[in-house]
Image 1: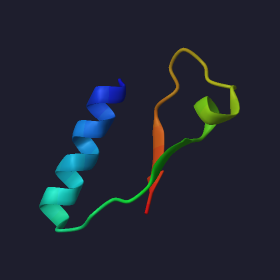
Image 2: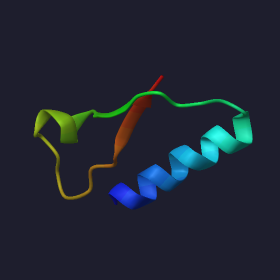
Image 3: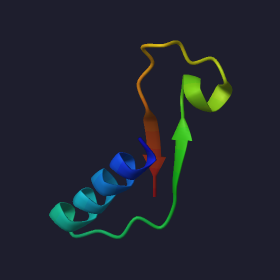
Image 4: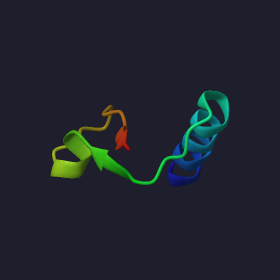
Length: 45
């Protein structure tokens, strides 16, 4: 999943003409409360 997320961030940079300087996982996975069907939440600057 890590590689898929990194690819998506690269796509966002290219399509939007921006540079992502920092990205982190947020939500239930970051807090250790993920369930089997939890999604992946990523915030970035």
